[in-house]
Image (cartoon, rainbow, N blue to C red; front, side, top):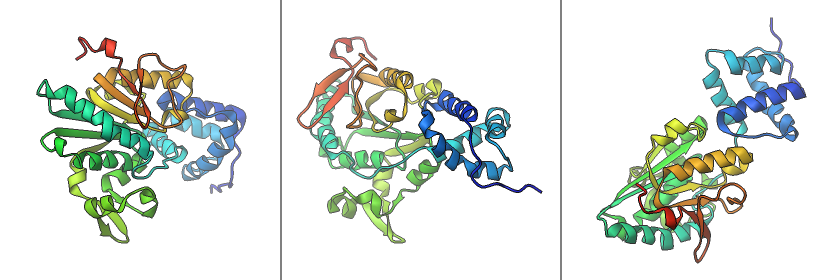
Length: 290
């Protein structure tokens, strides 16, 4: 009979094997100092599979029939999904007051009334739903075809995003106006309205999967906030290059307040707005860009 030993130790070699497998799959990078965290969080997976060491678990991740599903569970265990509505509101003010009007002016002359926004690393959905609420407050957008795509690598948080029901912690920075207008009470929590959900689609996506990313199509704006901080330099360069390919001409890339493209990419211009600085597809490359 198998008897699980609590807190199975992970040696350095097993840590490197599992760490590198995770990195090759999705770009998440862990230094040796993170070994204890991986050890603690993955011990339950060893128990579930009746395994007594991490080398066996590595081989399971690498060669078993359900390796993709198991790796998805590992990513759920190792990723942090701290978010809330109207996070980094100074940047959102830049989006509503300056970026969105600029896009509207630019497209007005062409008759194009389509707006496509990608929330890359949307976690439990607060970011794409926040963007949707802000757009609904703009009367100029009422006759536009608005598409907001939220993606994340964690299937666990995506189920929460699709459900659209949130507890108190998600509203730490939300004005009562938005709560009263776009939420209804449900079991001591708040459910996002269908009016908001209609603008947002939620799907699973690994940012390292270039083929699937390309299927999203071109975007006017990409929000990728507090995501690339978990990547090493090579992974950051790869993901940012992917974002560059997905942007329409004049498109904008909004990163987290502690993130920048310094030493990562020279493919974007840094635009200085009233409340924030935002990256944009360079003006000199607009001509001929589809």
